[in-house]
Image (cartoon, rainbow, N blue to C red):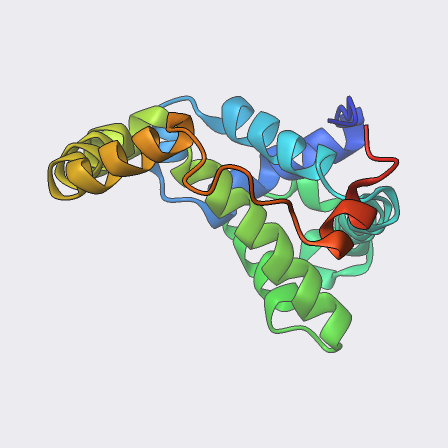
Length: 177
């Protein structure tokens, strides 16, 4: 982990994008800060230059609203909700591939962070721990004999005592601690 923390300007832009990207429940349940924090964890795992490009893209997105006529000289993070959604749409269907890819990437990061929230997972009935436990039990029932056989093979005596390893095998292991 890089110890990455959002700069205030980055956090403001991401805060403003959560209501644009996520279902209304994100705001209604007070999850905006948690979602933005989760995006920060993801960004912290990115290579530095990639993360830097993403941050510059967010800054460009924010300041680009200043020259967007309906924005009335406001940065994106200060746009009213309806205008913010329209402005984001101009990037999502933007004039260049860079606009589109940045908007898609940001939307994906925010959506992932939204659906990773425990309250959202619970509302959807998504309980991975229960599923993992069920699969683990089923596999243990199905493969118990194989698992036991393998475990025994690890501690049983060598079935070919007195047989020297192949000469090449000995040379490969020399010098290995």
